[in-house]
Image (cartoon, rainbow, N blue to C red; front, side, top):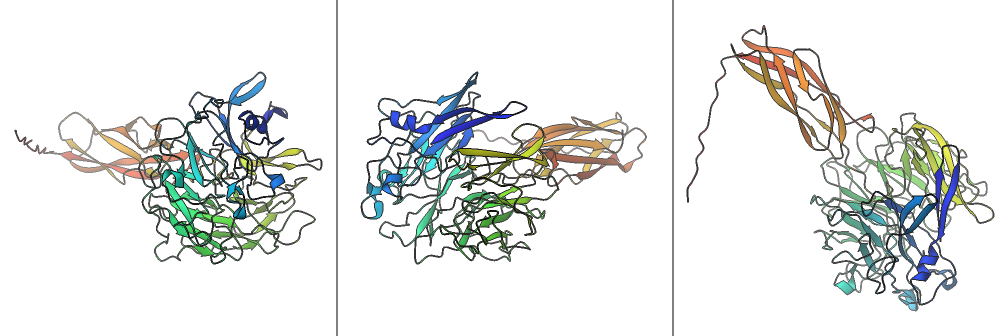
Length: 586
């Protein structure tokens, strides 16, 4: 349960801070303290309270359904940065005397003992899922969202106070009967301007149907359930959902694998739903869910791996046992397989044969700067990861070795600000010490990173953000009264047809056209003043020149760019029609 922070000083990487999280668990007075703890999840990092300092959100305790001697008190802890002279992190808010605010939360002992392990066992339930952070209630700060095995879906403010209406649980009147192993995703699936919480569970649609079906939930920040949810599934969902606009309709779709445990339900399927909870299917495409050969526990990744402008769904298969025939899948949104997939991915471990289970998120990134997206795959407890090309070719098996097995996917980012990408992976060494390995790669920091880490980003939202798209007129027309002053003007709009933001620039083919401003950054819409010098123009229509609009995001050209628009001016008698205003008096 030790949390480590490493830092780069320009020459070397060093550990600058470490902390045993179990000290803070025990300080909260659990009924049965443990001597140590464990962290089996990915941390979320964000400035939760807007003070300019980053916080680290970590879940501890791990699995509940395990041998008694392996169980640990669980909880959520939030540490805030205090400075680097020396480096120091402390709990952002200590636990209050009544436990209603501060950390750790939630300090619940719901399961772990008895037949089916459904009764309290004297330990606060461990949390085997990663947190997600986002402003789900529109209050301006970021909330912490966690789903666990305690039959609840939680949401807290940064100070540890419960978000109004939460948690989602049967004790609050919600039809949630079991917990789960799925980490929540955050995204605005209903278009209300706020992210919803999307998460899989092991809970049936109706009480009494345990071990017969499970559910996927979508929840508003005010704790109300999004219409169309929860969705009944035929298998437990151990996978974590990914959100992205698969069909370009402006709405987010939901993609998730499943799990295992319901004997009557398929374990080898990958689901996709529309934002309203209906099954996803492209016009003329194949219906979802799609089938694999083996169990699908892994979270999916979304990204345009083949350059066709659409998001592909990439996921590995494999259950909890060490089978050797597991494949990596990549589908187009229409349900067809990407050419070259599925593919058996060999293990880099000298002791392993075949393609072991792939339970972790495939990482999608152009880490080598060759202009194509690579897929980084690690098998269960493998001593390294493998690189697969977007055509299904395995290009590197042994180039990124580890000294012990990997229990989490690597991540790709420019972590030392040298303008180049690095790959980071963590495991251990032969002496049971933790180990972080960092590889310098050739890809520029601006290279495409569709899905560079677990759940896409360090906030762990599981959201592929809507990509920006340049909007610009096809043609621009001006009307000029013959005999008037030579300059004629109008305003021209530039807009974003997608999401996010982009940098734009305008260029004219002639000095007769003046633009102001000629560049900027926009999220929604902006207007530009266009002026044409009509000196010497004859009566009638004149094509003056062409304006070219270009747009980039992260130094890469976006959809719709470049866009050209001819500018035409009519010189003659211009009539103006003024419509009357009619007001009705009371």
